[in-house]
Image (cartoon, rainbow, N blue to C red; front, top):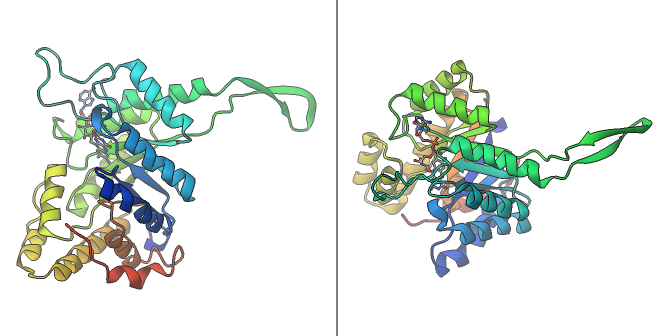
Length: 324
Ligand code: FAD
């Protein structure tokens, strides 16, 4: 896939306090001006961010021309609760979802694994499709060119349902083949896009994507990428992903004394990483933004992905700093 035709998307998380909430609309506006395919918004397992996630999604829907994607989790919930949650998001106008199971709390009741009634992301995918089908009334519509004829129109709008993929295996899976089987189960349930966990070596993704394709996974799998612009950001990223430390990048960041130098290392690294993935056949890149626009837009600019979308973005972003 050549860089200039690759698709890209962004991930945000709901703000955690009033200060970050006040800053987020400007970030979203800057990200939306780059014309991503979608902007996804994470969801706290067990519903902890239900309102704040929906607020961010509504902002994207009402103030930009970009399609929002809602992450949803099902861990710890009943069928009825998850059904209501999906309905609420659909009523708000959301038509793209990232269906993830979520992690149960570490300390479950004895004999209870904390997962709830829906046991996996694949079951959540199925439920989203079911809710979508139930919401749309059955109707008969005229057949063009046949005045007396009527046909059934389910009126069903297509929903996009993305799912998580783990190039280096989910921490709880027993083997890579189990992860591929899980992806196949998600596909059978109606998922039509994969987005990966963070990883640090292009071949992790490229070999996983090839194995998935050979096993029959038909939907595109977007690699998730985060520009790591400081040692603190790298530490946080490793905590979030549970991946092994990329020692070369870690050393470069540690020995560079200036923040500006660290930022340049992180952006150059992410650009090279994304280029190798795209050259290797990735259908696009999904950028973890950490709720900041500068670094991800710089990466896209260096990949030449912004030139048609927003020619004014480049020079401005290179001079802006962002915190760890
Ligand atoms: P599943 O795919 O259902 O299962 C995870 C693993 O468990 C599988 O890979 C498989 O190895 C094993 N497994 C599942 N079903 C079976 C089975 N029937 N038999 C045997 N083994 C099985 N978490 C949040 O809380 N909020 C978010 O917004 C969020 N967004 C994410 C976005 C991305 C792109 C990614 C990669 C992860 C995200 N997560 C999020 C984290 C996710 O909730 C956790 O990784 C969770 O542990 C598993 O979710 P899953 O959807 O992969 O689960």
